Image (cartoon, rainbow, N blue to C red):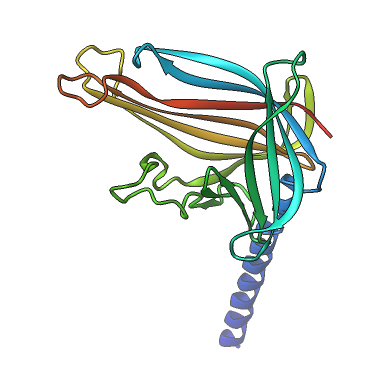
Length: 245
């Protein structure tokens, strides 16, 4: 009788455990947060940070950007994908001009995004708080010829799920945030600092809309005789939605 009762207890615990796991992983689909219908567009305020005067000063250049889902294509592995064209203009008095082309491949479990020949895993299933994945795992960040070592070992993590958010007077009922990296080293304001760096990146997605906000900055600072590059090198990009269809 004791063994029978013990078995019932264990079975009950397993049932409860499985039930809780099922509830945790019963999540929304990533395609809801990056819809890819042809003709869909999002317009952004784009603020680009660059360093001028031989890396001694930062400045921000502002544009409007419009990302349009242009066509369905196949990627280099023969999978269904979509081409997105980015158009830029200074303000509403100017005509849109094509500036860049991106490739998006929804795989079911992830969404791959190719930008400047770099493939990122932007979203990953399942969507739940604190779920993490290596979003830059396709990138060469470690070889001697890598141009993007700062992308190494980022942990993309879901945060702030199903949160209403207002950006530029646009109310988005349900959003998710993906934190990607937040690292810093040294203090460039300290005159004794020889080397410093800052890397920060996060993105936010609106349900039924797509990417609604991106904040990215990476820079290195060197202050030493014989350094290959004195001052700051790097750049930053901030996108925030101002319109969509």
